[in-house]
Image (cartoon, rainbow, N blue to C red; front, side):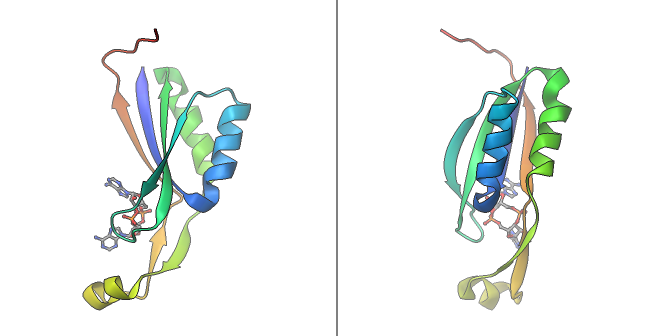
Length: 102
Ligand code: 2BA
């Protein structure tokens, strides 16, 4: 089993969650905040069989898009960039050593 951790832009979250539910992919949705922009995003925990990892990532990919976002003043002062490109999604895939449901 693998654990997909996906950080998704808030604007894409409804679409991504809807399609995962439609396809009967189990997930947990958590409210999260990006450390750089300090804007809300969502983090999805998705435990899946290894064979489904590719399909699930494609579902996420197709329902997210990149956006240019104005960087906050505190950020532009330090980094000299007026906008940053955010998303579609940041995805980590990790091995699950043990899974139990009780
Ligand atoms: P934030 O940390 O708020 O980052 C928002 C966007 O700002 C990033 O988009 C990236 O384009 C830019 N950015 C982030 N850190 C930067 C830096 N030190 N200097 C210049 N620009 C920077 P994404 O890369 O698409 O990331 C979207 C969100 O995904 C992030 O929101 C964060 O919540 C999460 N994330 C991204 N990479 C991560 C990682 N390696 N580990 C954990 N979370 C990550």
